[in-house]
Structure formats: C-alpha cells, structure tokens
Length: 587
Image (cartoon, rainbow, N blue to C red; front, side, top):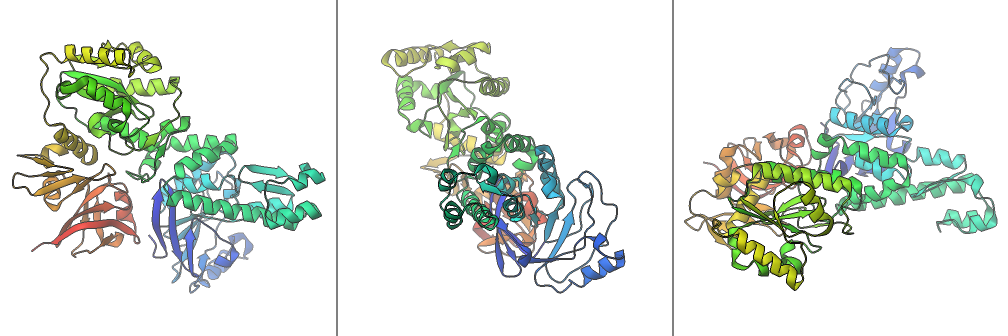
C-alpha cells in the first residue's frame, strides 16, 4: 500500500497512474536519475551498518529514495537480507525477480536484474511473480530493459516505470532503434543508407549530412523511446492496448513468445481485465483466441447463463454487423422464421467467442467485435467452437436442432456428430425457404417461449451477477418498459445500457443483495460521488473494473460501477474503487 501512487486507468495489466513525489509523474513513464536517489548496492560499503546508515540518511528525501539492496544472480536468492527501514517520504525497494519472499511495503519496487531478462519465459515469470507479491497500488520499475520495440509489451506485462539506459548504451555501441527493431550502425555505411533512414527527426537529418555519430544515435534512440511511450499511453487511454500489443510483438519471435506465455497466466490477466471496454474488440490473430474477454464470455455462457426451456434450437452464423439483429442477414433470417420465433431458441456460432445466445448479443464483447473473415475455420477455431458447443448442449437439452450453416462452419458442426437438420445456410430465396420449412417442421407442437424481452433481462442478470441471479431480480410480476424493467408497482428495478450492461436501481440492488455477490462493503460513512479505496472494508473477489456493484455499509446503501477489481479495492490505499450512481442513507 502506498500514499504516493494512484492508478487512474486500466486496460488489462497495463495502467495509467500518477506518482506524487518530486512533482507529479504520469505513468507509464520513463524516469532518470533526476527522479530518484539511490543508496546503491550494499557491496559498495565497508560494512552492512554503513549501508544501513546510508539508507537512514535518505529518511527525509522528497524524491523517491531507493534503499540499499543486495545484488544476486538472476535465479538465486540474495545472500543477505536487509532490515526494513521506514522513511517519511516515498520509498523504493529492490526486489529480486525470482525470490519467494514477500518484500516489505514500499511505494516503488525496482525489478532487480531486469536487464538480464532476455529469455521470454524469464521475463514473463519475473514480472508476473513480482506483481502478484506486491501491493496493487505500488509502482513497478524495470531499469535497463526498454526499447521502442518492446516498450508496449513491457507495459502490458504490468511495468509502470522504465528508463532510457538500454537505448543510450546501444547508441554508444552504434545501434539505431525504431519501434520495428534495432539496426547496427555498421550496416548503415553508404550515403544512400544514411539519406534514407526511416526517421526524419533532427538527429537523423544530421546523420544524413554528417554520418554516424554516437551522440546523434543516442538522441534519436531516446526520441523514439519517448514517442513509443506516448503511443502506449494513448492505447491505454483509448482501451486498445491489447490490440496494439498483438500487433507490436510481431517485431520479434521472442516478443510473440512472451505474449503467448503471458496468456498462459490466465488468473493474472483475468483479475486485471475490465468487464467491458468502450473500444471495439479486434480479434486479428491466433493469440486473440486466448484473450480473457473471449474465455470469460464463453465461461459465462456455459456456466452462468441459463437457456430458456425450449424444444427447438436454431444454430445461425454470425454477421459482420453487430449486434447481429441489425444485420441484413439476420433480418432475413427473422423474416423467414416469422412467428415461430416464439417457439425456438437462437444460438449464433462465431469466432472467437464460439457461442452467442440471441439474448446476449448486446453484451460485451458480442456487440462490439470484429474478426478477419475468410470463410475458413482453422483447426484451433474448430476445436474451440466444438468444445464450447458440446459443453453447452450437455447443460441445455433440445428435442430438435436446426442448423442454418454453410461452408466450413456447417462441416465443423456435422463432423462433431450433433444430430441436426442442416439447411445449407445462405440468404438467397431458396436458402431462406429451406430455413422456413425446417423451422416450421421442428416447431410443430413445440412449447411457446415467454416474452423475448424478458428472456434478455434474465440472461443479462445471470451473465453479470451469477447463475440464477435472474430468479431473484425478476421474481414476481415484472413489467418490461423499453430498456427498463419494473415491479408490479411500476417501480424500476434495472435498465440495460447502450453498452449492454445492466444498471441497477436501489430496489433492484436490494433484491440482489441477498445473493452476497458483487457487493462492496464500506465503513461507517455515507459516500458521495466516488467511493475511494480506503473506505472499502471488503469486496467480492469476482468484481472487475466496469462491473455493476452494490455498495453496502452501516449508514449507506447504493449502486455504482467498479473502477478497480474487488481484490484491488481491499488492498489499495489510493484510488477510486467505484463511481456511485445512486446512494441513500440508512436510519
């Protein structure tokens, strides 16, 4: 916990924040020796006591004070353990990448030996391990590792502070950095090479005129690093960090390997990934199949969502336009089905989300994703889709299945052995006639479903608040009025937002409170506007940024939107835990 660092925005493990010492530093940031003082290695002192005295001399520093540290080989524990020291100002602690010990409390943790983390497995294991051992509102500094090419990956891993040490040193050795990699100055020998450098900064213009000079290479390298930092900040701000990282790691096999290894750390990523984003979800490469948003959606469809009790299941392909109902193809499907829509359940098959029940087509990311469309489903996509479909059909039983699919998608479902009436897919007149006839036959004597609008609310309630939450929220007589649901006295319970989320009223929150989920417990006070992390007594570990939460305390009851994860609320001393929408005092 710290009083000097506050996280303001999150996009996965990547964060934007502010450090409150020596002026305000906006993170992610490049820092230099002007921003901190360091007592250095204990081995630079005549005795341990001298090192301790040096650390105590930093007690009243206004800058970040990095206490004496014990260097160690990358995969070894430090030979000595320094006693903890309390400072009145911001404190920095060197933490060993692979130590099993929890470090003492600090405001900034310096990743020891970070420059030696060249192996992707070491890099991911080190950053993930350290971040899991330190407080969520502490900053992580990794010196001597950043380049324009890898900075996005490093920030996405969870590093807040970096520096220009590596590109400065590379400049001295004649290396020329860009976001696309590094070139050796020895390869830039001719006038034509120098005149066509892929940069028109002041230093590169001088290189074209004067030739390779170390001071010019250093200035260029540092400028490219600063430019990349600005790009990364904008990616976090616009909630497109994952898409940018997926593109940027193609610079080298090592970076692509690191991203794939990071995706294997599912718990680490899931705890830090917001429930929803404002930006469109682009699934442009194979790594997109492993994204938290994809696996979380599928897990909720299979584990939380309860399909309506229907005799007939209709399998449909996705569409380019989202939500699907607004697309030309799905409007034609709806016309072909006609009034029989009240007698069947629709399930859309898509990559990378696998399964999207019609009722959840407005939920994130189903309503806001895009994927390269070739008509070809590769082996990984097929395996993912069929695994999800098999699990879904094991939980939800149907007497008859109609599959209006074509091409690879039809072939994939047929190969799974699922018994269905396959109509060949398509939107031509004959294709729609086949769909209409198959549905008419399948729906003969089928049960009629409830109001489709009510089914959407039930699906969203379970999706966002857990299995069977809808039974509590929608108990008794429910009136559907536009995007709002009301009780029998016309008192609002909840409404769906344009982003597909559910916004609870106080009455709706009162109903769900009994489930004990998505609740933020606060102290003996009445918050206004924003709920800050120090006021949180306890919070549901399921809560993620963007989730609708119920705020409950001795003097207050309210609803709002989470700004950090539940586990983070409990462990932080700074930052907004939730934005409050409605709050009332208790008598």
